[in-house]
Length: 571
Image (cartoon, rainbow, N blue to C red; front, top):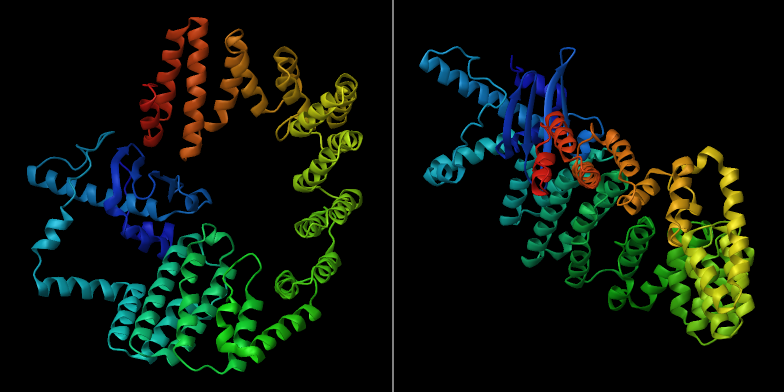
């Protein structure tokens, strides 16, 4: 029997927000199929999402390959598929009623997708009054859409107070401080862009004085929203929209006669409030002619006062460094940077780079060497290579070899091994250095024990591969290697030892079978192609054909996976 449910059940499963968004995606549902107690479909858009809906212990459940669903939510794509299924069943029941057939007679494993109406033809057929009626109905049913149209109406009539009120409603979120959800970021960014457009029109119409206040409120509200968004704005959608507001503030100020003192205070307050990881601060130099010497000085004083109050604050340090750098006094800049030396040598490197740019190379090298010597944490490659380059240029090969040896001992990686080998060969000391390096690698593997298989696996295996000793690397990987290492070696030995490589591929494919999403599908297809190559090498093509048929039957509801398999001949 086909899965049956109501719109109320969809609303309960998804919540009002996702249910409302799902309404917009019903027309994007494709390949709708009823398979016993499940409904499967694809929802198209920027990406294609595989969707499955089922009932578990009387509760409606849904699974989709989108990020929101992967976090355990009944997403808008699941809602869209559910609504499309309700419509399809209703249409089918109607057809059966007209023909006198039983309602369930036509529900098989592959119910045809109902024919979609031609939306454009329908819209074209509406007259002006009908279009107005449809628009009014949409506005009544969607508060956000209503506010956006109200904003357009206010800007068209140059109703400044109404523009201000609606900008607050769209961007202020009613004083809420909880994080924006992932699905809210796009809608919020659209609101920012529309408020920016309204402010721009006000400026065109000569309302610069009022626009100053509106754009400042919009910047404040948007900044707060980004801070609250946490990971919801990971692609920078809101931040990019916020950039549209900054030039509007400058434009509004230039069209008025701002008080330099008040303007300076506002610029300083905003710039100090901007989180250090975001770059949407005012560029004070753009306002220099409006601020005058006194105003610029006030901004600088505000930065100094903030730094004095909180010298460890990231934003305070950034702005104070701008002031010191702007003075042109290199010694003052070095002294300022040296106040905040870190355990990784990063600040030492910055000082060294500043000194070298001023042709003070000996001082630069001493600072870089001090960074290596004093570091107690992870040391970045840039600092190491800064010193290594200058040792090489000065012909200090013994110092360079000691540096490479020490770095490999501290961080046993393939790249450090290669650099050690390159330097040791130039010094005609590689055999001895290799023995020492191998001893360190074996000691490290023994200390790690079973933990060596975690992460990327023992570095010793990667180095044996680098040196072309595949047999030794393969044997070691079977006891202590990670899955990525075993997969890499399987590809290298597949031609000569296909049975052993096949076992690696089978083990890697097993945990991917229940997963959804494009990344999982690509990995599955790559592994299936490798499995096929192993069977071809062994001459067991019929066994692979049976294996593939069983796999496709098991995964048949994943339409994107099936399509990807077909594209590479895994049919």
